[in-house]
Image (cartoon, rainbow, N blue to C red; front, side, top):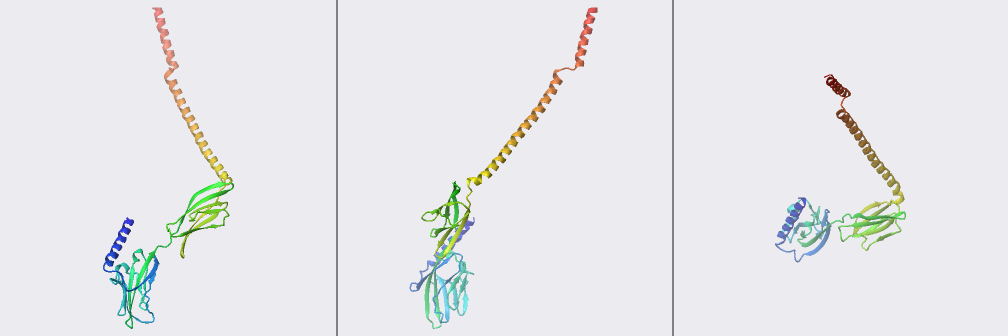
Length: 291
């Protein structure tokens, strides 16, 4: 949703600029200047006026005087003439310079200024503003780390979204074995102790950097921890097996006791019952003999 709003806003601003610029081109006879600004910064557009003479009027506009954005007329300054610049402009009535705050990409257009001094002389200038992005912070990604004879071979990749930035590496402490590719994007180094790797992206006077600390854990250093881990794991597994065996035995003993009780109850008649039946048969036999 946020991306859609930004796209619609930028499209609307571009459409406004196109509609305003369709009336006419920049002033053909004016002196052209060029200035560079960065997004979010403040830039002052120079009018190139003669500061020794008092100014009667100053008029800043876009697209060859078709849209006034800041004026100094009759001793009054007005910098809220155009909604796209409202609250972001400051006009110097002495020099005629125009300051733009919080510069955006939409501000990268041609600005025309007309100055009239106390001697009624008119000076016209066209300033083309170029808006660039500040260098963004690069990011370091670990490609691999391999143990080798008490040291580690480490591969790092420095990623930068600014294609025109120059990349470079700094290692603290410095290492005797380190290799870079042609663009300094990929670094291969042999590490024995903790090392701080810093990748810097530079352009003109701007710099942005990212750092990562790498520690080499050798096989001898890992074995005690691995042995402890294996012991703990073996203890957990052994405890689980022992518990399962005990539960199985307990269940078996309970089942056996129940079967014995049931077997005694249903398959062996009580002794008294057998004697009664035996006695009965004897008495019957005696009666038959008597008869």
